[in-house]
Length: 452
Figure (cartoon, rainbow, N blue to C red):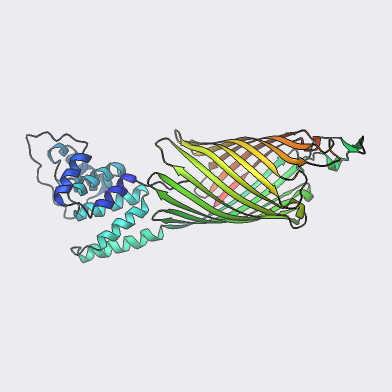
């Protein structure tokens, strides 16, 4: 997900050191949302705070100052105090607005700067808050006790820029096609221009059964001046009533976001090792880059990915793929919608059956907050066609094509801070001109997710 920042706050921070008093006055006129018509009364004297007010006293002060805003439109000290009262009353966004006004009127207003950086920190703009706090520490007119306070909170804020996140998921489920096999009782082969019908035993037909899934992951997320970085490690295992299809995997990835004036771009590198039935199946390495363009409602994006897969025991299946995707990510009413179209060229490296493959895919992802719960779903439709005939024994060496539909529905409900109830429904249907690749499968699981 993209790292969100206050663009307005970032711009104002950038020019704090450049504004002279007359420029600040001009900026005030440009940025003001109030009327500058002459008023009958002048700005009244501000109260002098001898001690830190209590929460109730801050609310009383906020209400008192709020009634005098129109008389103090050009008084930086007034908006600094009014912004502080809003901040300590929990009205963060309003505090930011009024503290920005105080600094536009007087870029050297120290008390406004201190509270402004606190408000930015509370709103999630951690990097900008740290930058502003560092600027305050360089001021020569800063009292020693204030310097010590700012230095201590700056160190605490810096610690918050690095965060470790750990997650454990344990699920129990049921699948009506554990071995992902076509629902066939017999298979027709072509040999010397003659059709031969082979009866399939039960092991070659879909096998139903239960499965247990275990997954653990750890992530190190670092906030940076121009985005974030994320280093992830994960281990997953699935055991079932059919041990020969049990899978285990080990993966890691590194992701880096760079923010731009009109959006951001994210690149990542990753590797995955998969074991199937207790034996090594394949290892992969991949890299991708995605460019997002920021918009008020939706962010269009373009993505490219390269992936290499190596099968140690079946080298004929070694492959390299290139994918290009176009899509848009929209935030709607406490939810997200991601619609995309992708094209993939999968290149065979060792004379694989069917040789190269070409895939087109449409995908729609949706996530919605429903009370405390999170409901997410994904549906995709893809078509794949081989470049060469798949096998001389199947339909006279016809070129294989498949059309695949996948649908997923997940539900996550937090029980407490560290524990959530997790469940999912999954469906896949694949149609092909070669009967051997006509497959259908449905599964459902239920379990818990732990964060620590």
